[in-house]
Structure formats: structure tokens, C-alpha cells
Length: 164
Image 1 (cartoon, rainbow, N blue to C red):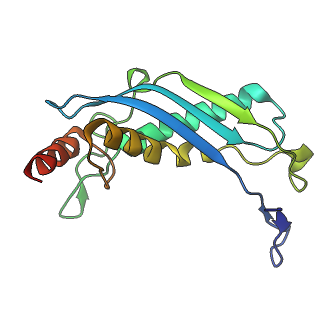
Image 2 (cartoon, rainbow, N blue to C red; image 1 turned 60 degrees about the vertical axis):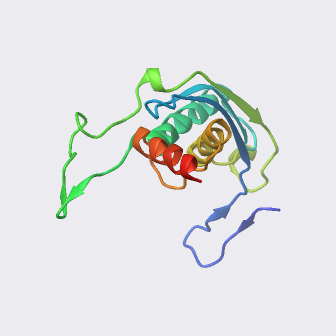
Image 3 (cartoon, helix red, strand yellow; image 1 turned 90 degrees about the vertical axis):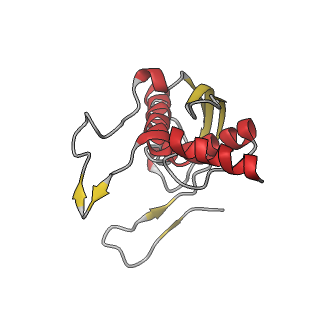
């Protein structure tokens, strides 16, 4: 679809349709429920890639954030109080949790974007969790529908599959 300017905003908000796809291969330990991402690729239509290295970094950084969202990050509450308020207890992905992501830049000139570019900050994050969920479903034969997909939730899904 063609992008358009939205009326009623002080400077005219832009709508630029951004398309992307993520592919992920995982290994699931059926004894512990641990998910290891073996490899990943992400392709995004970014309009014109004015600085391709920055675009690749945005795709990779978004993927890294998506890994946290998909597998680790959860605010835990007890009677309305946060029980994991620091980075010791709030689990973030580390470099060992994130594979080298193959970023694929797809260019199409966006008429309303600056120099033909589209936004690239958030799209790298958006497709990560669904791609990981699909890879886990492919690996263990059961679909997890709640994030984060922790080892405990993977084991519960495997037990449920065994009962079915």
C-alpha cells in the first residue's frame, strides 16, 4: 500500500508500511526446557538504507530485544510489589543467548520518508518472538502461547503434550 500523510497532526504524521520476516532455528532440551537459538536471519524492507551498517545494527539490536521479550523478561509481582526490581533478578539476554543474526536489507523507495527511508528501529523487535515461538513449536510439537517462553513453560507444554 502507498504511504500517506495523516491529517490533524501539527506536522503531519507519516504512515509508512514496513514489511519484515524473521527465521529462527532453535534447540530445545526436553529435560530442562531450555531453549537455545542456533541461528537466525531477519529481512526488512527499510525503504532506502541511507547507512546500511546502522540499518543492520538496528535489525540485530531489535532481534536481541525480541529474544529478551520472547524467552526471559518478566516483571514478577507479589501483592502488587515487584519482586525482581534489579538486573540480578530481572533476566535479560546476554551475548551467549543471542546468535549472530543475519540481517537482510530489502530496499524500496518510500516517497514520504526522508531521502526515501522508512523507520527501522522497532521492526527488528516485532517479528522475533513469533519466529522463536514457531521454531519451538516445530521442535517440540506443541505451541506456547504465553511470553516469556521460560524453561518452566516449555516443560509444562511438554507434559501437557504427553497427556494428550
